Amino acid sequence: MTLTKKADRRPDRRPGTASWGLAARDVPWEYAPAPEATDHIHLEPEYGLFIGNRFAPSKPRKTFTVINPATEEPIAKVAHASKADVNRAVTTAREAYRSTWSKLPGRERAKYLYRIARIMQERSREFAVVESMNSGKPIKESRDVDVPLAAAHFFYYAGWADKLDYAYPNRQPRSLGVAAQVIPWNFPLLMLAWKIAPALAAGNTVVLKPASTTPITAYLFADVVRQADLPPGVVNIITGPGEIGMELVTHPDVAKVAFTGSTAVGKMIARAVAGTGKKVTLELGGKAANVVFDDAPLDQAIEGIINGIYFNQGEVCCAGSRLFVQESVYEPLIDKLKARLSTLRVGDPLDKNTDVGAINSAGQLAKIQELVESGIAEGAEIFQPDCELPTRGFFFRPTLFTGVSQSHRIAQEEIFGPVLSVLTFRTPEEAIEKANNTPYGLSAGVWTEKGSRIFKMVNAMKAGVVWANTFNRFDPTSPFGGYKESGYGREGGIHGLGAYLDLSSGANGR
Ligand code: NDP
Image 1 (cartoon, protein in one colour):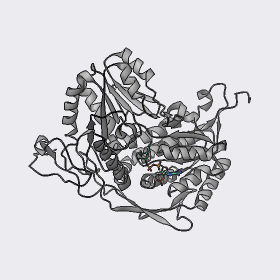
Image 2 (tube, rainbow, N blue to C red; image 1 turned 30 degrees about the horizontal axis):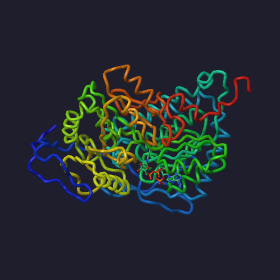
Image 3 (cartoon, rainbow, N blue to C red; image 1 turned 90 degrees about the vertical axis):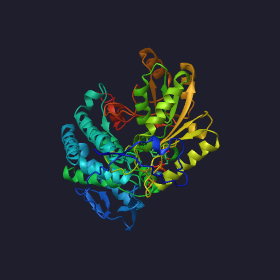
Image 4 (cartoon, rainbow, N blue to C red; image 1 turned 180 degrees about the vertical axis):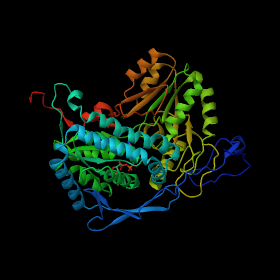
């Protein structure tokens, strides 16, 4: 790796991305570019809907263009599904459920899931590059986190497919039918795996709608489905705007709805399917508290804080976006945090050195800018490293706010960007009260050397996942989900399997 002393170059200063804080001379090193190769990638100019193991244009034929958020260049055109296409996809899934998938023994379903997992591993480089091109996330994250974890979900749930009776003793687990799955743009392939793997293991068929900005790895996955010889109609993928998502989840032949996305859309879906008997899981927004006590190993905590909020540009529902620091360590921690922030490399997602890639869309960038401006207007103090931003694409500097009060919008609303709000506390009780002062309840973190304090905090913080002395760790065996406005139901682990089963009958049929 070549390191060059940075000359006195001035960073790009665009409206809303002005830099405050460290001067360029305090950021001493520049890395030579280390771009990931893209010549092994083959992308189609246009992707049709994937229904019954065939790609076909929407009816009537209509498309929209998907772009690379780091370059604003088009990647491909994808089909814009109509209401009739939704009906066709659900009917195909229903028929595949009735005629094939629900009749296969669990051990046969497991073979398909293992096959999918292995093909994803074999094609992992291709998936990683395309995921970074389409979502804007750094290649080191798609390569080391998204793709391996997505494959791990298929391996994990393959293991359960023939053990449902053992998983639920004294119950008679039954598959539900067709699952409608609507997923967001922040982890396109991983969310697909979280949804499809347990659904198939439990014996359901699926129709999945990816987010409109990030459908490309879902269509690569469709190719994996064909390669794995999955019976036609078991997995169907359709693209189109939010209304198409609503058509899908409200379709009368859909038995199960799984949604990950904003709280606003989650509430609309919950209202629309209320009383229909559909089983529903909603994984929505978050505003996680990351609480650092004065006995925490500070250097380790700094890495956890950085990973907690700047991983995936902060576009993470469980991001540690509110940092609570015990007053006695506030100053040393903030000094270290600013120094570490200044070493983050922002830029080309396909560069292996990049830490913070592109924001997923112009709309999301505008939302981040608006909330950051509200933080300044409400009196919080902003710090941004003086790093250069590419001149094209949707980029935002990693940002830190101090002097934040609990009523500030940046402490209340989900920003979904690389923006950290720092608050302070004196006692554990005060930390708990402040951490829980949010309409959300998805995740939290605690940093301390005392085991007893970890247990106290974990029990007192109203969050579905609480990390201790780490942050943003995921594993297919661990359930994930929230309280309050973060939604309901769990994904991952045996809990995530139960969400795709009818467990109302006992083993003796009652
Ligand atoms: P949305 O909730 O709108 O999008 C998530 C998924 O839902 C996408 O596939 C979207 O399709 C689809 N969708 C949109 N409207 C409807 C609808 N009426 N009925 C059914 N499905 C629908 O999130 P946004 O992309 O608008 O992001 C807005 C904010 O939401 C972000 O700034 C962030 O705060 C939060 N968010 C939270 C996520 C999480 O993981 N908790 C993930 C994404 C966003 P399409 O892409 O075609 O609009």
